[in-house]
Length: 398
Image (cartoon, rainbow, N blue to C red; front, top):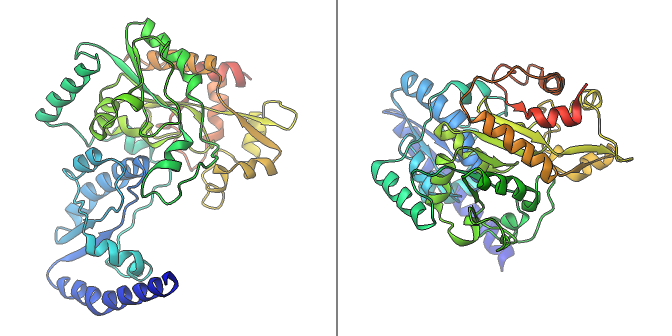
């Protein structure tokens, strides 16, 4: 039955698009231009980062002024976080037009060939935009009051300070509704939350709170952990607090996951441990990162010269997606090791210095050597994130 219904539905929507939607759009264009975008919204990273880098800056700075007769429709389908959706709607024309969503599913390939389709693509090197633009998002007075009241319920006062930490968990893709697959998928970006706990307890010993983030996680934290380390993901999670915590934290200690980037939309600081692949280093000068450890078949660290020769830090349309798969590195005779708990503790201490507001120290020799990987036309090195100094000295000291 499905074999009949699906093609029939596709034909009906194609007929509807050709006979009704396109003529209506062409008629309306006599009076006002219509541009339709179907943004990636089912992952918080795509929804947040590319709204910020492309839609907010390009849409407001260029299109509103240059095209005053143009009207935009951003039509997200599955929304990863409704608080973030609500806040972006304050600064961008985002609507869930269900007719367009249904038609667009089948009519997308045709619509994208017309002038009504609007597409902006992020390339991963928009560092100046993140570094020099004003933060696009903010909370209302009511949201501020509500947020701090909710934090008081979990033991955090407005006078306290805290960090957020997060380890990318395969349970998220495996169990999230409406995501397509419902199985655990091995991914080189996943990592163990246990290796973050030494850093979390160090934060607690300094008098702060460490908040474990995550919408869906495989395992809760041990009950024996320091009381100032809060397992928010299993005990207190809400869409609203996900954004409020990320926006208000001293810094976010994350990894290659979308939630790690949320602070950047509020002018905050982020640090990404276990960052892979090597071309994906973050956005802007409010970031620090340390990658996973790339080793060869004999277990030796792959040198910077070898990384540069293989162009693993270069942005490339042809190979970027392949670099997210384990097989890509297997063919090169390489594999990734997670950052150790000691690596992440040292990185956390670097982030504390980074968040202190002091003038940044000059790059050490190891940082400069690692930074040369990105010294190309693909990365604006003036504003690009830096590798953590302790990590660089430990693994890549020339």
